[in-house]
Image (cartoon, rainbow, N blue to C red; front, side, top):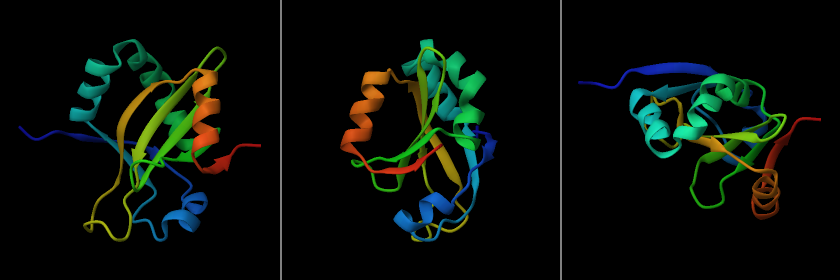
Length: 128
């Protein structure tokens, strides 16, 4: 049984090109397998992903480069009492052709952890 993919949204790749070079697409997808992962590993945050995942991708407050995994970014949306982090693997021009930017996972991110993340990693985009 093949996992289905769903279009989560389109991202503005202009803020990523300087760091990553050419990117194959502006589309961000999520697979059934990754949704199962979020449910299994971050069940308490799955509702946040359902409600705000699209906004984190299409209108993030921060895009931060993952310093540990090549071609991976954190797309963060600030919420009233927390933040949501959607981790996306970017489809680089050096990757296999035809890939799309893909959600790896998503979870709640406390302000202190966001601050630490911004201190340790390169901020590629900041809204405002």
